[in-house]
Image (cartoon, rainbow, N blue to C red):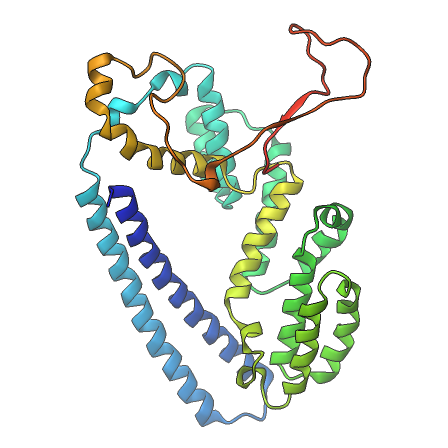
Length: 336
């Protein structure tokens, strides 16, 4: 097994432990909300539940830190090769350095690290227009609200961008309303859930089967949905998924790829390194590296890194030649 595969396997373990910790914290938030909203509660039962969740969170936190420590050791053990041989500095210097700085800024803007971006701009002397930062600021404010389980800002954004979302066939708005509906079911507020079901009726043409399940969950309001066949609807993972879905939809509407270009580039480079390292001696002997703006061998990066360009032509009858190509001829990747 190559080093990259070993690291990916170990990183999956870190992600798994982090997910367990997040689920425990989410369950604790649910218990706190239930205690705050319910005056007539069984104190002993809730106290035992809180103690159980605290124990689970403590164990998950310890396991998570242990997996991070092991991951660091695996990195030190696996990444022993000197990869400076494969570095083509001409690609990230001169005029190309501006593009690299732009990719770095966009990557951290996507993640909401605005202070880090400002620091990077200052240190690198990179110019970034305020108009390019503003959409990311708004996006991350909404994502921050989603993490706090406040859906209203995201629903307002969907309402303002509904035509574009419908054109894309997006399910984002339905997913947000579904979370609102399930929250009412968990709170055992039958009247509010029935009233909210009228809003869900707007999606009957596109999400009929999912709506049928949501309506079926109403039968278990009094006994608790967690004890029914519909308990998957209250899986905390839905709250984590909605943040990713919103980010991808918002980036798509802004004309950006679903994934960070910098992340894709680093991922592709990591996948290519083992193949390049295996033919390193041949490359050094024949001085193949750096002669052309291409890799000396074919590297399979998998379907996630495959992009197919297509050309959109205008209906203009005017001639197009090599020096002055038509402005209507554009290249688009499948993710835009």
